[in-house]
Length: 467
Image (cartoon, rainbow, N blue to C red; front, side, top):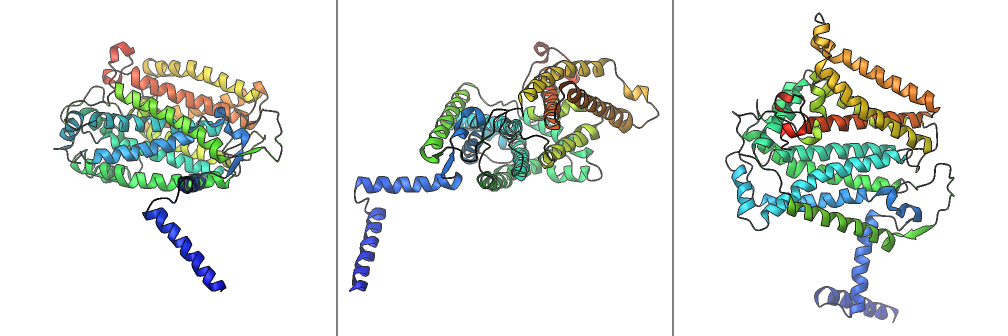
């Protein structure tokens, strides 16, 4: 009898499942419950079931992580759409872009969305990492996820760089030529690596195919894999840091709310606002496209993509080995090592570590804004280490000697700030980071808007910005 009832129950369950899948829902209520269950399961794969209520404050995260995730999906979708109208060949690529913009319905809009979403992705990822840094979100146990974030930033920039060449216009061709030229300064293996990347001695058909393959397959797959692990680590490490005032001690049991609907509704609002802004911008501003690439005619000046302009500006002041290799790798290594240093204060969740740290960051910003242009102008018109030290190799006279002076200035700034403000190591490290980061942003601005023909300093009205 029990077996018979069990068979009847199983039959009833199978029948309901069959009707739900193939014949429609048994009733609207059942259909709604089924859809909500599927949606909740998808959301809770990415989020915990409950979160601390205080972490819902927009001023903690600004929704930057979610924006980066949404932009990744936008880029994948728009990129797939563009692939249907693109051939990675120098003879066809530029014509395909023209055809896309003039003959394909919404082709120009789709290209605009893809282009500006890629640029916005770089900005959002950098801002996301700044938010993590300034709220102490990289401290134990989140150190390794910080390193994964750095890797995601590198992949994001690389994705933009490889996509930069695909229109095969003058802007793209010479920007990639300048950018890949930096590879040659890698000791011993530089020329070999450049040849592998370009597929030959110079930018050509093999380069376009290499960049296309990296852009549509290898980099996106790597991004999705590492992003998935990044999400997993965020959840495993206890979610985002809980915000608190500088002198506040958090209770062990924080009030919690369910992820659905409290967090989801906020993510939905942020996502919609960003998508509306991106769509409106893409409707008003077209992605740049110059004349077809011409290897025989170099624009003056030939500039790298905007996110590399800080490094191109450094090339004007340091030996290429220092500017293109030592400084970038040193900065990456320092950032990766930073969370593994034992902190001398508990500042997790506190913006800028403390009120003192906030003031020190403001001071560091002002010093960078004033000193960086002065140093650039001084080096442009007054300093000449090569002429002053003619007996030394240029890698010393224009490389390690000015680098040593720069490092001495940075160490002096560190010690001065720590002494003047009687600050902790964490606060002083943060101020030093702000100094260097703002200085790099100013170098980027100078390179984009104040460098004209021959990379000579000029006012923006004389430069004729094409970036």
